[in-house]
Length: 567
Image 1: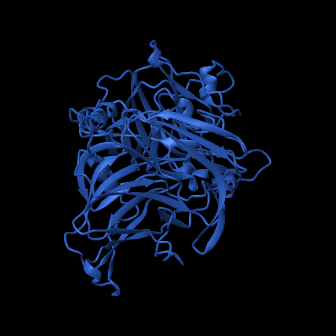
Image 2 (image 1 turned 30 degrees about the vertical axis):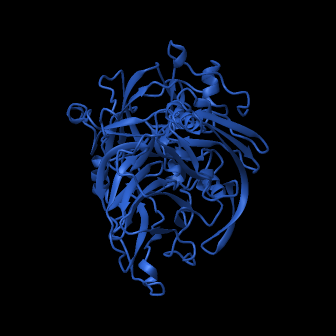
Image 3 (image 1 turned 180 degrees about the horizontal axis):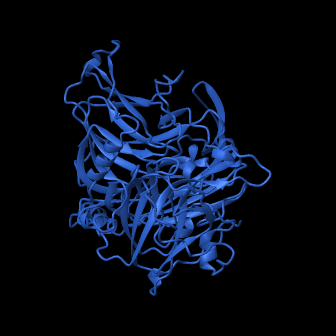
């Protein structure tokens, strides 16, 4: 009898697990919290009083219900960065794109299912500069009984890079947008909220990674910094990149990883077989190519080996430091980016669109806009610094695009005449044109359901060439080509990789170069595309794609939830 019961109890489990969709509930209370870093205390916006915020864990196929309650004076929205949001655009989170913000004292339930994705992503605020402190990891485990396509790690460690200001970041960006000047740079970078020993009075605030000899660790790295791409390295250790933006990649052995804001990278770290008589610095510092000043500091943690039976317990071990590329090493950046390739196996195929229905050529970069009347501005020659795509600096609407689209009320909110090409041709990476004023407008591109889209994004040298990490909401795209200089439509497409290109949600447009991406518009809704350097987003380096409904019931966007915030 007991055995029969035991067998019944054991056997159905795998059969169930194949279809077991778990609904996971989270409650996020947005509140202020006093936090001390660099010997200064300030009040920051947090989720549940935690900094960095709580980790969300789910399995592929799970449904997430995240109730966000706003207890602070700021309007808030949260974005689940890299989650496809198939037919759940109401839960995507960018303010005034898919929703009006959650106002003080209000709440909203983000309701979405994680479909066909597994790996590391993250969540962050998506309004003004609140994501400076409002961020945390999302870990999507494979379905039960599915394994990783790489050796099973002994332990998994989230490592989230952030950027810290002593001053109030909301005041910093608001002041910059009023004066037209560049906002003040940050004071430190952080690993899991900790600046580390290379900053004043921060030795106690140091991330420590303790490892056992011979074991393999999976580091789930996330760049949640506002305005800086980062080089990352661990002294005397080689890392193996196995996943980027929650997509498995062909393993790459490297000493240095480059990770832009908005990107995630999983690496395997194999600990040495014998405990070395040393500790090892884990360091990250900026990759910065633009004309502006930047926070040229280094955040550091320490990799410590478990010592056999208390050997070296009280001995001060030497701390070895890693070598990182020069801050403007654009060649390293290009070579690193080109190494990333999809697995492109039967189990993990790279479904690159072969035919292209709609082609776009977008210039991305900086520019100027005129100073408002009766005001003096601090940009060049009494102008304001701006940024644009095809010379359009995106003007944020005051109602959400998705509602306007869904209820056919776009009139007066947005137009669908976003230019497919720049207004005029020039030597994009050469001498800039004499007029570098941008136009402004709330303009989007309308796409039919299931259109396959190719976008070539071209950096410009206006004000200064700079690497721009472009992030697309609602889709992953394939990085089919990239290069320095001006894109050549007659020669470059012949070299596109349509076999195993990287599949990502955020890609760096090379400084003084171009990148070509393809995606399938199979997700109806309003989808934001923007530079993930927050200062450039604030200046208007953003646009939106409106993907219309398809014919079938599974190709239409459902109506909004009843608790969708009102503007």
